[in-house]
Image (cartoon, rainbow, N blue to C red):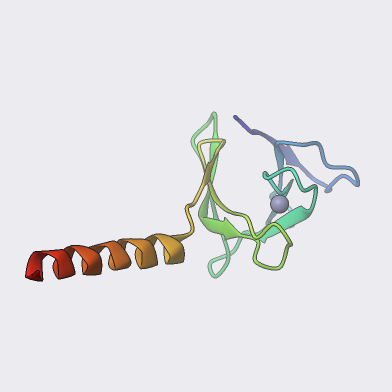
Length: 109
Ligand SMILES: [Zn+2]
């Protein structure tokens, strides 16, 4: 799913789905959570906040966006107007660790 971006001065009241609104005046980007839950996600653009990259056609935001405070707990990157969901890193690590331990045990036997 490709997102679209809009450079705007004032943030509109009703946000469209799959659209990232960028206000340079307020140094803020805002979009609806890409999981579809409809919650608004605000990403302040600042040296300590998010960095916005505009290559003339698409935008990227870094670091990743983790909406831990939302019920959906979505975690994704926006890279070149594409949303890329992150796997749950913690679970992945635990899983692979368990797998590795099992393999070690098997080898020992
Ligand atoms: Zn969501």
